[in-house]
Length: 243
Ligand SMILES: [Zn+2]
Image (cartoon, rainbow, N blue to C red; front, side, top):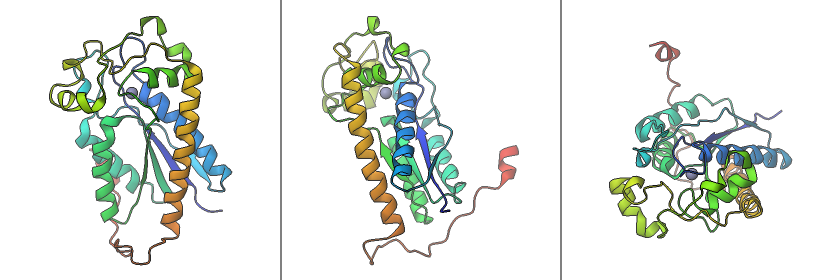
């Protein structure tokens, strides 16, 4: 039997306003990853789910109680080592539930590509998505884990669009633009809307993953610039694990 594809969900442990749990991004990434495994299996691509990485790079949420972060540098290193250690899988698909992890995943992907390893990164980018703990994430959490949502505490935060907020959030963190930590307006969120957002995301993610996996096996472009005999860096020695 062909070696399976490894699917890894990467989330975060960070404030999501007064009404959503710290693990919101992890719950969402895990659900998408689980459905992706089922979809890959149905498409004749054996796949297995890795344990979730539930702390990420969340420096922009500093100052809010409960937020924990490895930071981008550690996150990048962790992903590089994880993918190196997974050479016995046919490929690695990383489902990312947190925008703050994007830079670390991109940097890790560049380093891994130079070694001839090509993890496929799937961002949990919802259609019509607002930035953080707003209507989108609240609807999806109502669909996935309603017991973890305190809808009675849901209130609007900074409601400008992400393009308007981006520079201020990057400069001063979420706390500088939204005292309650919400970027968007969660009132009006529904489980039905969450289910539809999730179905759409899973369908798009599966199509992206299958296309990327097919391209890994059968490169469509014979003049692919990546050197197929590029040296593969060794997996970090186990001694490092024991200090
Ligand atoms: Zn989130």
